[in-house]
Every structure is written in structure tokens, then in C-alpha cells.
Length: 152
Image (cartoon, rainbow, N blue to C red; front, side, top):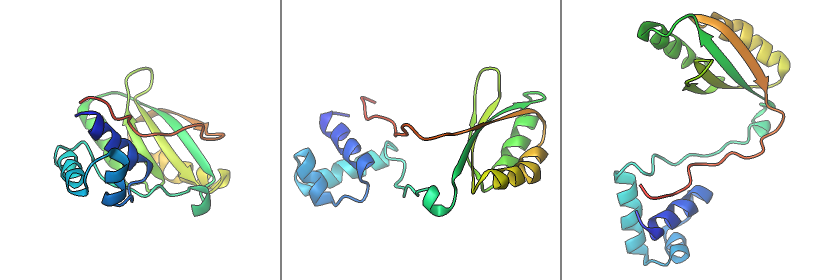
């Protein structure tokens, strides 16, 4: 991956809906050369997909909670059962297996605090093999960016 590929990735992270012609102009390539490079980045899996970032507040979700989860154990069966169950909860936006004191971090959305209480009591508290849950309410998002393009 060279400087031009990194420039393409930077521009696409900023605006994935940019036209190929505009992208080519920004990175200093012909449209056909730019399209070939983008296609190659997609084929290599460097570009994993294109997504719309939805505004949570405008979608009626004013609360974001980061939850630390500790399981009773770390057997592959326990972890698989937990992961299967958590994937079925639509309000869980992300689930990360982590190293450290806790086993998982969840990113959970809710309309408001009462809605989070409902999600917690209905879904989260019944997740299998959970020993401890800690909820951290996000006050505001300071920054949230994608992976910076660099040499692969």
C-alpha cells in the first residue's frame, strides 16, 4: 500500500459516497486508475464495507452505555453461549472479548435511562454465565474514528 492508497482510504472514510471522478481528482489519479485501486483494496479486504453512520439522537436513542461483563468462567462453551445470546439483543451495538479484569465490553443503546433499565432487566440480566455487570453511561462522544490508513 502506498501514499495514494492511503489517500484513497482517508477520503473514503470521510465520505464513502464520493463519486469515483471526485475521488480520483482528490488523490491525483485518472478515474479508471482510481477505480482499479479501490477495487483492489476491496478484493484484498482492506475496505471491509460501506456503512451509513446513523445519528443515534435523531433515531430516538439518547443513551449510550458501555458495559463491562465478567463471566463465571472462560470455557469455550460458556463464551460461545454468551456470545450467541448477546448477538440476539438488538440494542447491543457491539461486543468485544477483551483481556484484563473483565471478559467483555458491550456498547448498548437506549432511548433513555428508563429504556436502559428495561433492556437491562429483560435481556442483559438473563445473559448466560454472567458473574458481574458494570454499566458506564456515556456523557458525550469526544471522538470516534476509523482505523487510520497506514502501511499494511
